[in-house]
Length: 283
Image (cartoon, rainbow, N blue to C red; front, side, top):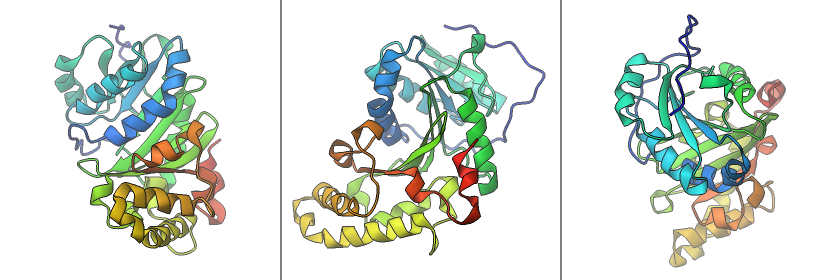
């Protein structure tokens, strides 16, 4: 197991979250990461991932290790928590390839390592929208070359989820994922939009227009419901692709991902409008 980073007099960057967590809550995000980022993990000489703000229990870090090791057996996961008591509670769960450290957005790793993945789920909900670009920039700066930051929000049992994927250059895509059997209409996912978008679901903003068009495509695909919710979803996404730049397989989209109850959209199409668009591109 890697050595722990030396103690630092600096206070971790960020604030303590509620710490709410549940087993299997992040399965949709994890499956997407393993499918999309697996090839990068396999090519890397140091495939290390960070579960940032894993919460009051370490379940999500344990599960992330299992899912990423299915893509690349050499993967290591480091759980990072700003609350020392949560780190202490997680230590008994350490194993080969899984460790826990005290920290925040500075994502402290031993020996100067840079993570190939930072997953930050349900971490920014309590922050102001204006704080998001700076947090994104700080986390992106910690990534290894070809690294990926995945930041988003889900409900308590992982039925509905939305996240932004960012490379070192800035945001790339937005993914919506759901348990199709529980979905009434696609705009139900609005309540789980990432912090950068959740307050932008109003007329005149791109994300509002996207969800409106998605609902319309879903309604038009109603005849496919007799074949199951999956077929209705696929048909709705196909219709949506005529007007919106959906991501292809290399960026986490395509029909194989649609079948999982996902759709991935280019970030530029949903980025906040008005004069604040540049802030969310990062620097």
